Image (cartoon, rainbow over the protein chains, first blue to last red):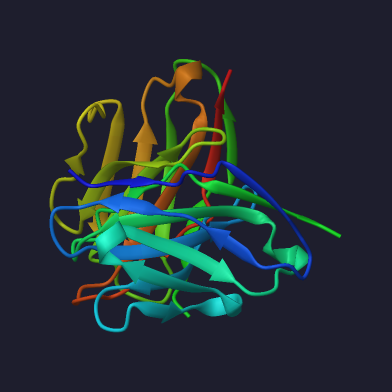
Amino acid sequence: AQSVTQPDIHITVSEGASLELRCNYSYGATPYLFWYVQSPGQGLQLLLKYFSGDTLVQGIKGFEAEFKRSQSSFNLRKPSVHWSDAAEYFCAVGAGDYKLSFGAGTTVTVRA
Amino acid sequence: GAVVSQHPSRVICKSGTSVKIECRSLDFQATTMFWYRQFPKQSLMLMATSNEGSKATYEQGVEKDKFLINHASLTLSTLTVTSAHPEDSSFYICSARRRGHNSPLHFGNGTRLTVT
């Protein structure tokens, strides 16, 4: 069975500081991995995805993530956070059928 | 880019009534649509997978007679919560993708259902 763990429920970061959100997954084969962002009362927007190839993936809004098979991790990073990055972030794992399993989410608060 | 429209965004209904939520792909043909439920401060739980022209596939623990899903066309899927109860109050989100290897998933903006 596939599953995703996001160890950090809530992270507070200063504007301009770097951000890293952790994601660990459990999956029997080579996973499809995703990071989504959700603003309050809204749907999900895809930040980036990994299917194969280069393990460092670049996404939108200056985000990147690195797939580490040995650690079963797919951590999300951003070098310099903007106030507009305050949101809920979800890591997800799945396969080509896109039946995704989502982590519990990490709430990011940005302080001025 | 591809857009998925979900309607209504908010709905309040009385216990015992039924509510229909629509999910439309506005500029692409969605061969597969997914319906999720999200409780406050929690993750998305997949309820069912809907393929155009066939019956929906429900996840374990989801009552198919309570959550009726219809995917009658390549641009529309509906979720009907029948005989709603307060415990059905939740945020429901749909997503859609077109046929094709690695074609992306697009999410609607969700529907906040409150059953009084």
